[in-house]
Amino acid sequence: MSSAHVELHAPAAGSFGGGFAWAFRRDMTIAWRHPGETLLVIAFFVFVASLFPLGIGAEPELLRRIAPGVIWVCAVLATFLSLPAMFAADYADGSLEQMALSPHPMSGWVSGKIAAHWVASGVPVIALSPLIGLQYGLATDTLAILAAALALGTPVLSLLGAACTALALGARGGGTLLALLALPLFVPVLIFGAGAADAQASGLSSAPHLSLLGAGFLVACVALPPAVCAAVRIALD
Amino acid sequence: MPAWSYLASPATFYGFAGRLAPWFFALAAVLGAAGLYLGLFVAPTDAQQGEVYRVIFIHVPAAWMSMFLYFVMACYGGVSLTFNTRLAAMMARSIAPTGAMFTFVSLWTGSFWGRPTWGTYWVWDARLTSELVLLFLYFGFIALANAFEDPRRGDRAAALLALIGLVNLPIIYFSVQWWNTLHQGSSVNLRGTTMHKTMLAGMLLMAFSFWMYSIGTALTRVRAVIIERERRTHWVRGLAGARA
Image 1: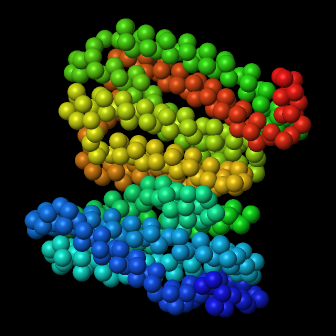
Image 2: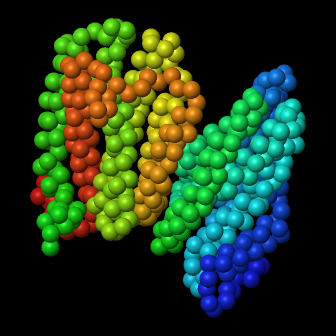
């Protein structure tokens, strides 16, 4: 229902950029008018991150040691929780089929939707990570590296997650199935992302981890949108 | 029309697979018996690890098959997406449970070997972790393939997932390798081996035995998938009528 309030008609001549901008604006408008979903994801991220000191104990040395890993796992789970918002509602009310009929190439508007998902779920996580890092007693330089690693890694999570959530459209066993599909694929991003801040905290260079994350980001930008399009086409078939 | 397209018809392949499967099982049994005899009775005791090393005659071939079968499964998935063939997707479906089983066997035997040798059942080592992720990829494939009312939809979605996982597998492997690894390096590579000849022979025989077993189970399973999918067709009804 949410998408019904937003303009759905697209111009006659299609282009990648046109489709991207149109879908991005549309999904951002929906996210803006229904801020509850985004706020829930943010609340989840902050709340789960503050559960760890309660469960493990509040020794500063221990918290400093586990902080990058904990923040990354929370970021991965927050991204995962917001994945169904990307396609599921549009699939359920038929908007996705309408978009597939639009003159824009599918890769354009699919990429726009993924970008909007990242802005609505990844950017708040990046922005809040220094705050949680401070609670865990991380040094300033480590906080910066942590935010940089999240900035490079969360778009990859959104891209990988888009492929998985499109594959699972209309499947039985929704959320559990999505966890089984997406979380194993998130493993490399988690390792390099947490590794960057870990290396910085222990006095090593974080450059190799950040370079690998950057390389992964570029490869994902090129390789995954076609895969997401293929998955959406399978779902609409 | 080329000869292979004749076999691409599920109705023809049903009979073909039924005739071939027993031969592959027989080969698996013969090779397995020879491999176990070499491995458990002929091969010498390892100088460092003692008798416990003998688990490699199951562990290493199972680990090889777990990765090889995923590759084969993804190839069938790719073929089914590219040429829109039904049989290739059914083969991918039929390979997955055997692949998952071998992944589990390699993890299980590895942890039994790790207890006396490393002093622990499990470590978060590169190879163990990527093998565990491989097990989850298999589970994801099986779950997705069976998650739809329309089996063709499950075929296509699972095939695409297998391809995404295939690209990710080396990345996962190299990402976890960044941790200090405890798992010993491979003793076999293309240039030669550091192993005793009978040990190597036993291991290779077991690997071929597992391979033949995988083909046998995949062919048997694909018959079940074919007959379930085609249950409303004349030839399956005819088959049931002939048996009754």
